[in-house]
Image (cartoon, rainbow, N blue to C red):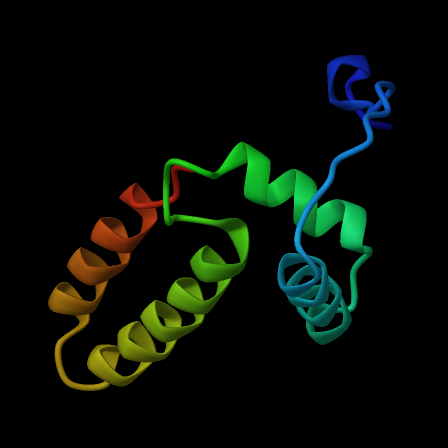
Length: 90
């Protein structure tokens, strides 16, 4: 169950351009989530480019790199994995 502080209970009406609305709808469809989730994510991460979607993409690249590197140098693979894990802050 979600933390009560994480529940969205406030509703606001926001005016935006058609282009922005279309972009939100397109992103929501591509990611298989609701437009409301995209808008909330953009608001929460407006000052940082490190969004959850980008972190997932980064983690996938890091996992692949660690896997490939582990075949030749397990120590360097563990080092890379540790460095990647430290970046998991939003």
